[in-house]
Image 1 (cartoon, rainbow, N blue to C red):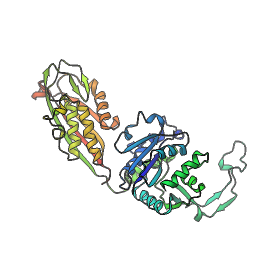
Image 2 (spheres, protein in one colour):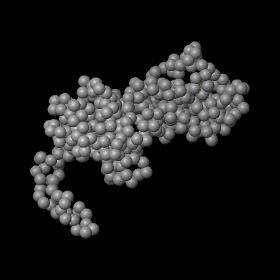
Image 3 (cartoon, rainbow, N blue to C red):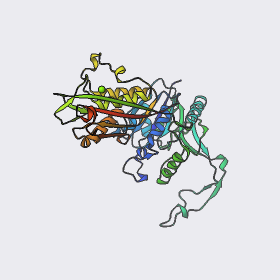
Image 4 (cartoon, rainbow, N blue to C red):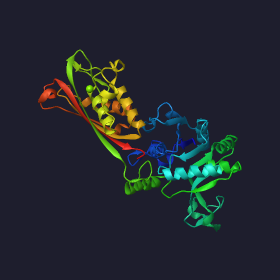
Length: 404
Ligand code: MG
C-alpha cells in the first residue's frame, strides 16, 4: 500500500521572535523541520515525503531539504491552503495520505504506523492525547475586564476530561477522505486541522493514542522544553530507538604541483603560479572528502566510482564527483553529520580561502556550512608537501544511519 506524508512547514512562526521561520530554528544541532522529515524518510511504510514550505523555498531550498526523496511544494496563506497544495502533489498511486505539522519534531515510527493502520480501517485518523489535567470551560466571549488577560476570565463549568482529547499530528486519511476535506476547505470552510474538515464532511475520525513527547513547538518555552528532551533523553530524528548508529570514514589524497594548470581546492580556484597534476581537475580536497564519506559507508573509494580509465571523468569537476558520492551514501540511508579536512601545503597561503572551500563542499554535500571544517597547515619544510612539490589532504567524515 502506497503512503505519502505531507509535512506542513509553510508557517512563518514569528511567535518565537526569531529572524528565521521557526521550522528552521536549531533544535539539538539540526533544523527543527529536519527532525520530522528524517522521521518520515526513515519510516519504511512511507513511500513519498512532500514538504510544503514558504514559496521562496522552491527555488532556494534550505540545505536540510536538498536531499533525495523529498518533494518540495509552495505553501498558501493558511495552513489548510498549504496542505491543499501538498495534496495536489500526492502521487496518484497513494491510497493513504498523512498530514504532519513540522512544529512537532518528535513524531516516531510507531505513532506513524498506528495512524496509517487506523486510517486504513476507518478512513480518517487523528493522533491525539487524552486530557490529563482537569479541563475548565471558559467561553471566549466571557467578558474580560479592560486591560485584562485570560487570567481574569471566569470558569463557567468543568468538563469531563475523559471525553477531551487534544489533537496532534500526524493525521492520516484514505485519499478520497482527504480529497473531500481539501475540497471543503477550498469551498471556504475553515478548519484548524484536516481532521476537523473531514468531520465537517461527515466522515468519522478515529482517535489514535499520541504522546506527550509528540509536543508542538510554538513558543520560546516550548523550544526550551524540546531542547531539554533532546539533550536529556537522547532523542533521535528517526524515533526513540536507542543509540544512533554512526560511522566514521577517513580520506587521504596527494597531488604533485605542475606548471600550467589552475590550483583548485574544494572547487575554489586559488591564485598561484602552479596547479596540481591529475586526470580530473586534481582537486585533492574534494578527493579526500569523497573518500572519507565513501569510506564511512564502506562503499570503496573514489577510484572505484569514478575510474581514471573512464572517459566520462576526464577533466571532470571534482565537486560534481563529490556531489554524486554524497548521493550514493544518502541513497543508502545515511545522513552526513560532519566533515573535517586538513590541507597540507607549504604555499600558497590558503587561510583566506578556507571559508569559500568549506562553503563549496557544504553545497555539494547538501549540509549546512557549520557541518564542514577546512583547515590548512604547512609541513615545516619536511617531505614533498613541505618542499612545495605537492599538496596533501587528510579528511574525516561522520555518517549517521537514518533507519538502523
Ligand atoms: Mg586525487
